[in-house]
Image (tube, rainbow, N blue to C red):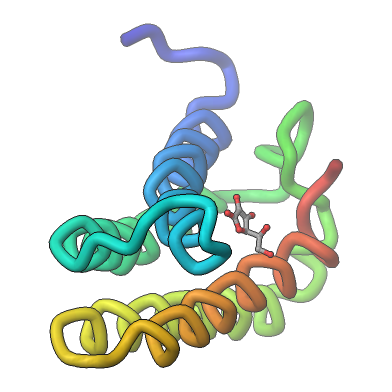
Length: 128
Ligand code: ASC
């Protein structure tokens, strides 16, 4: 595994990539694009909750924004960014907690809430 010049950005982006992979399955189930599977849902919800805790230490310094998907605004609004990061972690933890014992409609609604926390941060802090 080679280390590029912007190792921190590579690290956090790889975590987000893995998160999108697993959350994508939950989104597909919520949208009815994929049949609901309780065991898979629980597995993926747990993975997303675990992964949600990992990317943040990769937001090391403003210099790491260069050539990455991160906007420099992150380092100008650090408290706001961290609040949005926390919202995602909280929503993902809630989804993982619900996964074993809630009905599908409630789970799908929470998938929507997690998605909103993804979007909230991307809108302000991710370069397209
Ligand atoms: C995903 C994904 C995101 C979020 C966002 C939700 O599956 O990759 O970034 O959901 O689109 O609004």
